[in-house]
Amino acid sequence: YINENDKQITEIKPSIGLLVRLKILSLRSNNIHTLPIEITKLDPNTLTKVDMSNNPVWKQLSWEQNNIQRFPLILLQFIELETLILHGNYIKTIPNDIYKLKGLQVLDLSNNSIVSSGLPKSILKLTALHENQGLNIRNNPISSKLTLNGIKTSDTGTCLNVLLYSLQSSLKELDLSN
Image 1 (cartoon, rainbow, N blue to C red):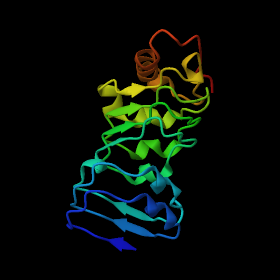
Image 2 (image 1 turned 120 degrees about the vertical axis):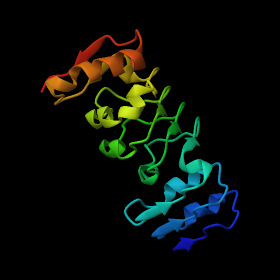
Image 3 (image 1 turned 120 degrees about the horizontal axis):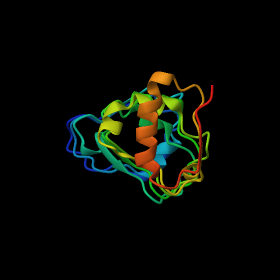
């Protein structure tokens, strides 16, 4: 359990990744702007609560070109996240729980390894992301072939608008079948 609220903390050391049994990480009201990539080593099944509210990193995080292989599940606890930049990594799939980041306005997943079935339909629930046309999935295997199974007929228009903007002219095959 780490509870260091209102302590003027400006950084988290990479050694945070060694605390694999950490259950609660509370660093509210500090001045943390970035997170070490080692924080992704914390077990999302053990770490039940993360609270870094009133820190710049709680709303905006950039982990570009960090050799990330999997979407960092710890980020699903950053419920006030507005901007997430994961450009230039090796991420293949986005978790279904991405919809929990309701305030997300910018999600840059460009230049990753996202495959055609790696984008969940739950991403359509992120209305702020779509209103801002903030989804960037260019330069991924998904850029030319995309499968989103089970899209409701009522969501098809939204889906197409999002994808056409996100992929621009690179999409060659789109499967929305049930």
